[in-house]
Each structure stands twice: as structure tokens, then as C-alpha cells.
Length: 393
Image 1 (cartoon, helix red, strand yellow):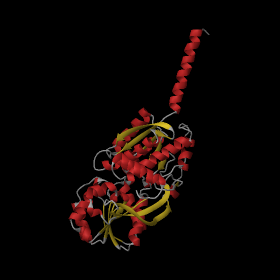
Image 2: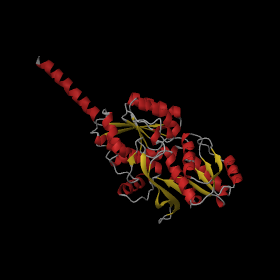
Image 3: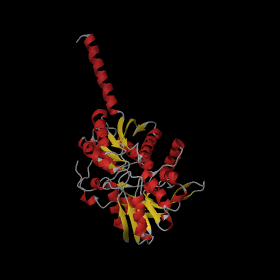
């Protein structure tokens, strides 16, 4: 072999080595979320929470340089699936996350799982993926859809309400919400309404509530839906006779900021609160307020934890992301400090965790915000679908 040929071969080998190094270092995450329309604030918070975690880790996940590819699903299953297809085929992502709405998640799931791409949920937890359609490539860093509503049903029962109206959007998570609430609520259902997802005018539902004579109203109305409903509920004078109760999403900081004083006294249930007393949460809340000038919501906390979970999986699999078994094992171990405190994964890859009660009140700074009260409503709680999950690789 001539010296010139040896040099060419050596150069080629060095180029291969560089390519291998580039493949083995770095992690790509596809973050598909809702960034436009009535649900935009929810996706913005997930995105901001996720990106904050990456920024605090010097632009890395699990010690590897992170590339975050962001797309707006517009709360549309078709748009979400198109974005997922593009990220899987063109961007060659290692993980996917970010989806707010369960109907979008159910559309994005099949192509994601088929490509053997891990999906880490920063919000949506449809019952389908918790039970018979569970998948080894799906992990929820948030909750199963029913859980927060089950906790609310327990609270309403404990507080002695006997005749409760329920309102939730007519899509998979809305139906999970009502089913979860009814599972733990022991009284009568005064009325039940399923408005269209992202509906903003609730004249019909307000009239139905007035006629129902309910003593309390349970709402699951995310984003702009909740903001508009609460304003119309109060304007109609119903807040004088009916107690308003919701999941954390319907009584979160974005809703409080938009509605103001009428939110005072509203109870809501959640697995996280910005005043939880643990080191990881204090770091997150302080950093979020400094970065964005607002208190984080549950969505932001879930986005942050989704990034932390991915980072732990990258680190503990030694960045061998092509080894799906090793990555899955690392995800299942969930070795990171969650802002919600300790939790573990169930056999269906959904969390077993505590659920708490919050009340909206004024804090020491005079801000209208959430305050966590009492012991957990549900302690170390999983979901009712896990027994139907037959997980296989």
C-alpha cells in the first residue's frame, strides 16, 4: 500500500470515527405540543418547563448535548401525527414528548411505538394506553387521566356534597375525567355536560346548571375553556349558590391570572403544587419564576419532570440509545429528583404517586395563588387499568 493510499484510508477511518462519535453523543427530542388556539398556554408551559430543565443542565440531557425539535400540533390529531411522522423519519429523534390533549396522543402513539421511539408524556395519560393498549415505548411522567379526577371525587364526597353537576370536554380525556370523578364520588349527579373541546361560550351549560339545583359543580375545562367558563359562571351569579371544584388544570396559575378574585376559595386536586417542600421543587420554582416572570403551572412542572426523566434514562443507559432494553430499564427506574417528590412506575408505565388538595387563596405577598392543604387525598395511588395491561417489548 502506497503512502498516499495509506493516508486516504487513515483519513476515511478518522471520518468514520468522527461520525460514530457524533452518533454516540447527543440526544434528539421531538417536542410536539399545542402552541396556538385556546389551549396554547398549556403547551407553552410544557415547552418552557422542559427547556428550563435542559438550560439548567447546560444544554444537556443525561450529560449529552440536547437538540429539542419543537412543533405545534394546533390541538389537531392529524397535525400532530404529521409532525410525529416528520420527526421520526427526517429528524431521527430518540424521544418524543409534549402532547397536551389525549385525542392527539392517541393519533401520535401508533407511528411512534411502531418506530420504536420512546414517548415520555408530559401531560396526556389516556386510559387506553394504561390498559389493554399499553405499550413498552410509552411512559407517563405526569399521571393517568382519571387519577386527579378520582382525587376530586374523594374530596367532594369527604366534604359532604350530595348533588353535584359535572362538566368536561367531549374528547377522550374529558370522558376519562368524568369516569374518574364518578368512581370516587358517592352522591348524585345533578347534571352532566360534554361541551365541544375548545368551546368558549357556555350559555347552554350555564342554563343547564341553573336548572339542576346542584350544590357543587365539578369542571374539567383546560386552558381558555376554563377561563371563559369561570367568568361566565360568576357573571351568571351561580357562584353564590354552587361551590366550584376542579382538577389542578382548571384552578391553575394561568386560569387564576386571567380570572382573578372570583377564583378565591376554589378547591382543586393535583399531584404537584408550587409550594411543595422539597429541594428539587424549590429549585424548579425559583428558576422558573426568574426565567419567565410567572409562577409555574402543573403543565410546566410536568414538562420539567419529563426532561429530567429523559436525562436520567440517557445517563443510566450510558447514552446507548440504540439499546432499547437498556433505555427502557433506565426509564422504569426513574432515578431523578422529581418536583412532586418520590414516585415509582407501575407495570403499565404510569406513576404510582400521591394526589393532594389545593385551595386558591392570597399568599404572604398578596398574590392570588394555590396553596396545598392537608395530607394526601390519595396516597401511593396507581390506576384501575394497570391490571388489563399485558406489556410486551
